[in-house]
Length: 468
Length: 170
Ligand code: SF4
Image (cartoon, rainbow over all chains, first blue to last red; front, side):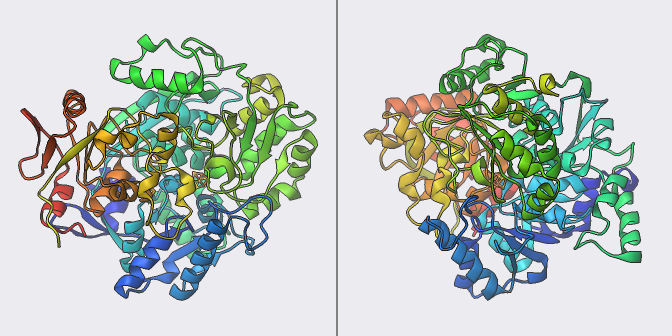
């Protein structure tokens, strides 16, 4: 039977401490990542109960959400942000947790830092007080976001209670068209399966399209599992995974690496593995995709009109109309040509070096449209250093993009990078919820980083293929 | 160990789908090291744009059971979302469905979230709008939601239900 067990169930069983009376599993968490936003209350809960961090060596902290990406001098202008910084510094010191702070060249967005340091490995369980923890599933591990009370549980016990989800195999096969990126693949999947299609499931992304992807592309896909309602998403480990992890700071070394790699490869779901549900999609159907609404499933191909309200299922029509009204768009309008005010390239979805390279290819030798404010924010200091070594920052700056320090920036509104008023932002981030980018009435169009660069140049939503 | 077997209170109807946690509590209020004071900012941006928002409607002040639509609480894992609702006065949520992390965060904080059919959610919201002074009962033992002469079956995963009804949630 276990030969037909999929990777998710196998890793789950390996980390099960016990089945609780409630039916939930007490799951051992191999790696815990924390950041400044969802941890202060958790540390306070520990303090209130006189508890310690059980395994500080299995816990790693960084700072990303609240830090300014322009002037990082301390104390921050925003005194609330400064208070949060002081809190995580104090908590990490008091509880013996390693903190990758601003003065550490490994600092960055938590979901970029883990993989880049080799902390995220196949077969582990990984939790973090952030819903995009699903990113780490790209390595073939179980990774999910948790709330602050659970952060406290994991800090104190290295375990947490969780119901076992079902597993859906989301198959995508075939070769992507030129100009179609991993971001388009996941936006397409969410459009097809819906924002709550994944509730109760972990998604296994499998098929030749994912096999052909780099680790960075796989991370983009898994990152947005949660936007499809699935708390975890993962991709089976293969040689691409092994090659990525070789020589990373936290990866095993020498013979230990070879032993680990052998085990990692064995974990992958076999061709006859069993799933609770399967769906299959074709890569050839995927176009450069842009969201037009207020949830990530409300998207269209760049040359496709937004459907008439009546073409949506009856139970969605009210929401579709609400989205159209908020965005000031009309049914049957094309998204292409919609004027933008801001362009944002960055975030844990698309702030990695390959994302910046693709965007730089589009920006090179061109100019950002005069009415557009454009920002490139590397996802980590390592990404920033690599980009600067390749001269990407010069390409961006020459084109009129601002080149910033690593952080979450305009993905969410917790630092000074925010939309103003009704601004429309072409964004490589992951959420287009009302108010997400800092102005309650601001509007977000999600797309791939290359598409954001194209929109910045054209001053309006554009088809990146015409600039390639 | 407080056992939560049922919640009775007045209703605040919010008959919308896909209410995300950025709407429940805008990210700027996550710049805090405690959850104190979040209640007054619940749905702040929606309220500013809609003067008739239920959270500002005097008829619903003091209500403790929120009734909403599909996929309530989607988006971020921020526990600030249930914390803001709790501090506003919410003790239970009735909706067509919930996003998982939000659901878990509510259970951990002793706030039962039960699912009813789309039709039941609609009828409950309409009935509560018509009689805002009446109370609803969310009964976790009978797995029923009762309001006036309306009575609907509701669902909740066994694990969450038993942790609430046996007082193990804390
Ligand atoms: S980049 Fe955005 S989605 Fe990712 S961790 Fe930061 S705020 Fe969250």
